[in-house]
Image (tube, rainbow, N blue to C red; front, side, top):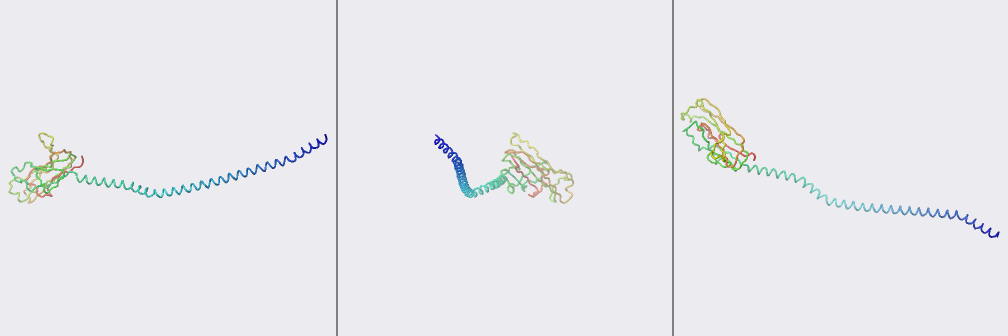
Length: 259
């Protein structure tokens, strides 16, 4: 009985002595596992970082290559964007110049074939113009009249010069008090009975022109007017036989400004 109790005592004593050792061994094992785990995690983290770095490096190289390939195209595209407005502006200017070159216009000097007789020296007379020495573009001329071929808004002008010289002394006309007048008329083709509309009047009263050996007076006027296809324009003057026959002194014209 006593022997059994003694063996139980020894077993309990040995187990009590071995328990701390087992606890210490278990703690060491846990710490080792923790260290190993941390080391493995660290290695994995380093490996993933290296992989990410390599991936990014390769991606950046690809981006650089793509950018290098695309840069000329982008530069060409930029040049195209810059060149297009310049080209468009130039094309617009060219179109405007071509359009302006096609605008209707007329400029006619006085014709030397006008009848300067004094059958009616005071009455207003329509001037005839020299079509051969004039300029006509998209405008016609007939019997002293400019005929509009293209409707639009036109500027109409006329200059007439009157002169008294020695050769006029044989006309036996009283020039002591005369009115030298210039008129511009518009004939509308839409009227059944053409009734000319006066667009302008210019001139002046001159006294004793037959005293001096040489006298000269010029009337100039111009204005804008809306014209239709087929409309006519003409100039008439008083004392027609006193007109200066020089082309740079007496002329008539019109040109289109807009629609």
